[in-house]
Image 1: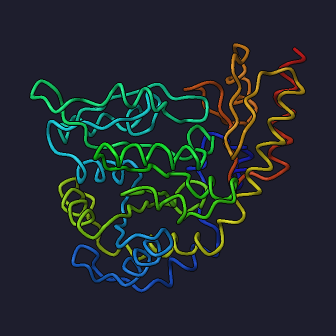
Image 2: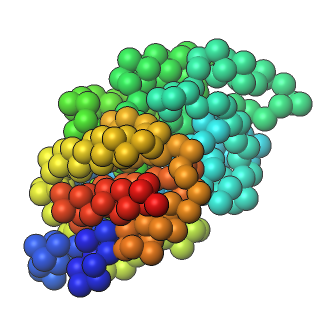
Length: 336
């Protein structure tokens, strides 16, 4: 619940608030000026995350949207194209930034139920080396996708195909740690298949702000230039880096608790007769939700979203009592 408000906020894992221990870590953080490159907390975090994922370098970003956009701008030039899922965040929910700001053409393809893109669709979308066509330069995947874990065999197969075509690869890993905890696959084993990876600290990990883009030193130099143009240069950002560092130390393993609560919520909703997609991580979707359910939930202090089906997201600020209350509110609606 949101402290002191009596609200069970299941809209997103972005609504989490820093814990007392995280706030203490932020207050104690040594800081400098990150635009000059001398904030020790930011530098240490960048080195830590790059090593964790097996990359040469990393760059701290204000948001996942900016992190993905900087990756696209570093990988592609004007008139280039990236292959991406029709419902991927980089294509659907980031304001068309790659096209608007980079002159980069997205080639959206149908997402399968697990978030993957069929290799046949990728091959059919690959443009020939012809002046009539945009230059296909990049494959962009997402893990997790709508809470689904992208299977490792698919990652291996699709990125191998991309390399064979001379394409670079980028992973939008906003909830990559959820995928790691749910699958048991180490994060560096997943990241090894990509030229760049973006991951987020302000979702399930519970930090107030921040994402990280990882890649080669050369790619990060290009991303740094893009970040500057986008206004993403921060000054005493060590306060934010300390929150992310604390999250890496204390909030990764506990993601399993969010996943367990999501399954309990899904089971409870299904028992009430709703059509529920089985969650793999912390996101529960209800398809064909009865009209008026979202409004009923909100009126009774349970906040959800309904942009792509009725969506419930568990996180560190929701406990078992919050899930029980959410189910009670749904139950009161189904009985009317």
